[in-house]
Image 1 (cartoon, one colour):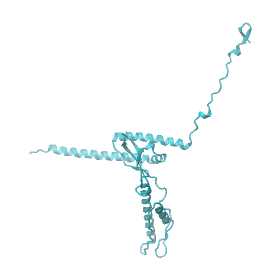
Image 2 (cartoon, rainbow, N blue to C red):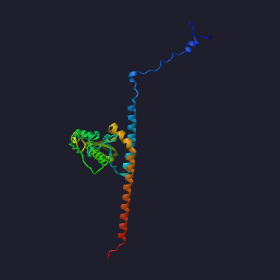
Image 3 (cartoon, rainbow, N blue to C red):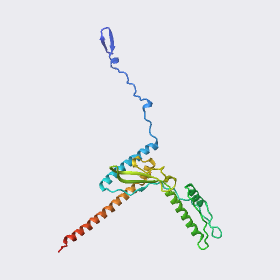
Image 4 (cartoon, rainbow, N blue to C red):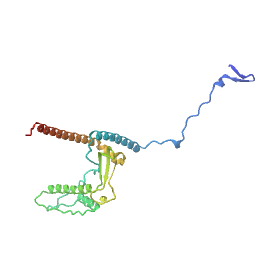
Length: 244
């Protein structure tokens, strides 16, 4: 082994001089690390990203055509039938007994503070099945009207507001019932600032919303062009006319 002398009195092996200490592993404190997002939060970010992209398209469409959309009703729809699938059985003599469906209607009316009188029709001429079917339809229609009229209004529009085109979310009080009071004030915000559930519902209907908007624009442009053509025809007729 070769020996290199740093000075005449202290011999230093050349192999030892060439070795360097191993660097310490890089570590981070756990308190500065950002934990991974929960799945719901991660998907919420995906919803927000889609809304921002659709809003950018809304800006382009509104700026290009200068036409606002019809309001899209965003009121949460009731799942399933309005009333339970309870059959009303015809009793002897043509009486219709109130079953669970009628009770549900009465309970809903009571919850909304509406007086509802359910009469028991008697008809020996009409078949029981016919009367039962119409009774169901009447009950469904009444309950639907009560629910719709007492539900706060929620709408999404493509419109020009506060100096910009975009997608906007409107929420207002119901026409009937307790929520029709001033506890719910009408408000309009950009759709990107709407609650997550609203943005989710809009995404589920976004394709049909923009498809209907394009159809509206096409129809509007066609009418404008027809009007211009009719005006040109009138002008051409008048220009050929001579006044004496």
